[in-house]
Length: 225
Ligand SMILES: Nc1ncnc2c1ncn2[C@@H]1O[C@H](COP(=O)(O)OP(=O)(O)OP(=O)(O)O)[C@@H](O)[C@H]1O
Ligand SMILES: [Mg+2]
Image (cartoon, rainbow, N blue to C red; front, side, top):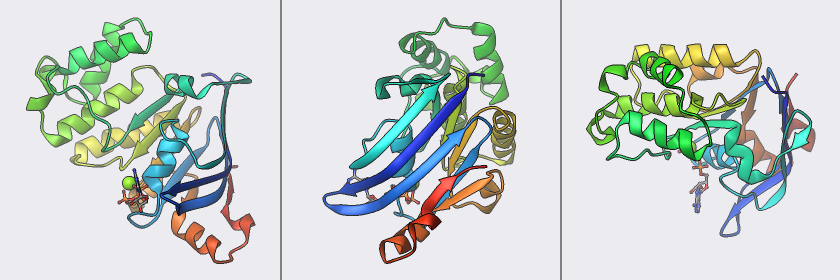
C-alpha cells in the first residue's frame, strides 16, 4: 500500500456563521484508526465530509500526501473510500452497472474478478443485475461497501457504518475494518460502542464544544500513535 499522511490543521466549520467546530488538528498515517463521536448535530458527518474533500472548511488547512506527494483536493477521491447515509447510487442501474460506471469515472479498468469478489463478499452477487431501486435498505448499504473498496483506497471513511445492516452485514463490515487497519487509515463517525472499540483513537466532538468555553487546546489535538 502507498504511504499516506492525512493532516488537518486548525480546521473550523461554520454554517451561516454558526460555528460547528473549531481548531481541529489531526494527523493520521498508515495503520492509524480514528472514531469521531458526539451527540446528534455535533458535526461528525460535517467533519468526515471535510476529510473526504467533499466539503470545504471555513478555515484551516487539509492535506493528503501519498508517497510524499501532496494531492490536489480534486484527486482525494482516488484515495478515499466513503460509506455514508447521504451517498447514493443510481437507482435505475443495477449494482453491476453502477460499479462499471464508477470504475470508468475513476479511471480504473473494470476488474470483473475483483468486482465479483466484492459483490460476493457483501452477499449481492445473485442480485448484481437487478436495479438498485429494487434493493432493500440493508442491501443498498452493503453495495456502498463494494463501491468504497472498488479502487482499493488507502483511506476508508465510514459514517454510521452499521446503518440498516443485519448481524451478518455488521460482521462483514468489521472484517473489512480489521483487514484495512494494519496498513491503511480508517475513520469512523459513530455513536455505537462496538464501532468505537475498533478505533485506536477517539475524537469526541462534544468535548470540542466544551473547548469553545475554555478547555485547553491541547485536549483537542489528535495525533494518533
Ligand atoms: N448544509 C448545511 N447547512 C446548514 N447547517 C448544516 C448543514 N449541514 C449540517 N449542518 C449543521 O451542522 C451541524 C452538524 O451536523 P452533522 O450532520 O455534521 O452532525 P452529526 O454529528 O453527523 O449528527 P448525527 O449524529 O445526527 O448524524 C448541525 O447543527 C447541522 O444542523
Ligand atoms: Mg451524521
